[in-house]
Length: 489
Image 1 (cartoon, rainbow, N blue to C red):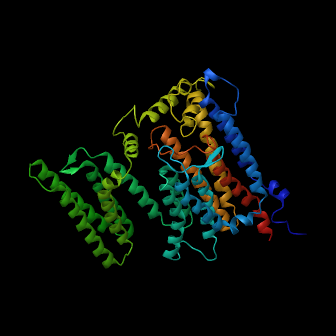
Image 2 (cartoon, rainbow, N blue to C red; image 1 turned 120 degrees about the vertical axis):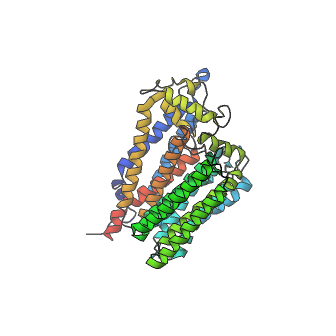
Image 3 (cartoon, helix red, strand yellow; image 1 turned 60 degrees about the vertical axis):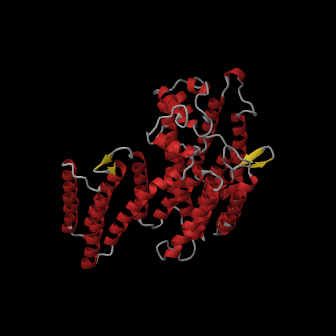
């Protein structure tokens, strides 16, 4: 029996993951309908005009479908063979973009190509995913084999981030941080993700709670120090495998804390911040001594975590002050520090009103008052979800949520059945992008996250975004469709 050809078109279309294709088609069509509803103008009502956002999006959808078919016809081996050249080409494009792009709302990230504009950052996503997958598929490559492998992987991720930040596109740059989930899937220590989560918590607490003090320490810093003490006790218990070591730490923290509190009640002024830092420093010394005695090198992680947490805490203020004024205001609005309903908080306030007014079944197609009266800016792009919430209600938003959940689960399933490391890593890159975009976009619209300009895949208006996500998905579909041929060889 002859072996199947690696790039047989009939075999490709026969082995396609059709549930994913169906979900994709439903999403792009639902997105076009939502864009039509968001941009509908009763004064100039028309069914569909190619000069309107919905008409332009329809053209982008048609071009995306053609692009998808082309990607399926390309030999899947080409994606792996030319992964690094594609990545280098996109990196060069990102580097020259600030010099060629026009300033649009303070950002230099859009290249004008005749009648249309493209954002290279959107295409950097699939290029970075290909390069990362190619790196991991290198013969005998293991993330934990040596430190240099971490440097290579992180370099692939951070080069686009830096170049996109130079274009003043913070939101697009942050998207690439989703690839850390891929590194975790491929063997990165969970301590890295824990450190990232801890950093976010420290940043939020350190920025938000600065007005009041406890024993002379700003509330935010006091809360973080208590967190550090709790984490030290927990990590010591796990890594030392001896409860008495953790118990001694707990008694030390509790005892010194009670003494400080009693002195404060008695009106005896104490330098709360230096004393508390000293308490943690003594605890670190104790842990180091126990690590040497018990021969438990992992206990050093406890000390490193405490030092990192305190260092990051005292750098939060400086980092926050380096943000642009409008970015600082967005963070403050998201954290509930200020309302600013007429300024930075206007979009979020109007979008939450729109979603809340939709109720369970919504106001009906083209009946959204917030949407039709243009109360929500950018409602056809980053805030498209509020149009769905107002007109289709809870039912509509749940339908969209289930679509994304189904797509993400399908992509993960595709990744798990890949016979090659390249296919598996690329699939998890695609899943990570979708998870990040969905969670952050919905978080922006309902006020859980700062507004950073993250589009909702396949729903938000924009050709670059639609093309970028289509390329991501259809390359994966091609790789998956030829997996049986690879196994046959």
